[in-house]
Length: 180
Image (cartoon, rainbow, N blue to C red; front, top):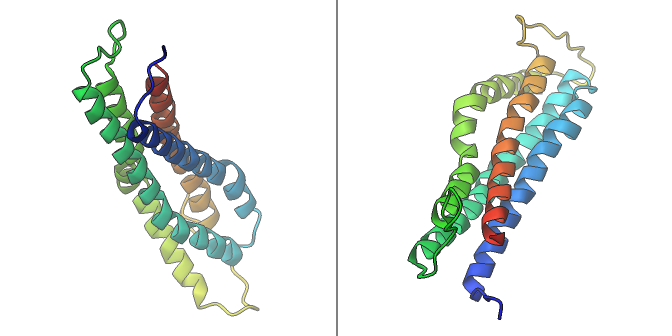
């Protein structure tokens, strides 16, 4: 007879996999579909739309990543306590695999702080600059090198792909571990 896992294990697997992969899809979609559309917009509109996206994402993203990480860490803990041999003929134990999946998921927070926060700060300053403009004011993109609003939004989209990669790796490792 097949091994049936208890309900808390199945719920944790479902929550971990779903939250990490949904967040991965949303993150990659921002960079591949939304950012190119924003770059077609005039600067004030682009910055307003980027800021709206940023404000929503800064609230929802870390919470989903935390939910995913907690689920994976719970699964790691439970597999560590399990009397059954886990992955006896593989490189990683279930305990280690789930722990790595959890670290990859919550890893978007330090990744953001290290790699993206500087670009976020520059873009938020640009957002503040354009809030004082009237509807009829023309905006001339002035910047030093890659410091124009369009260049910064484009760079943000590239950096954001790194978060997507972390989340995809988390979800794939979590799924692989759950299925083995």
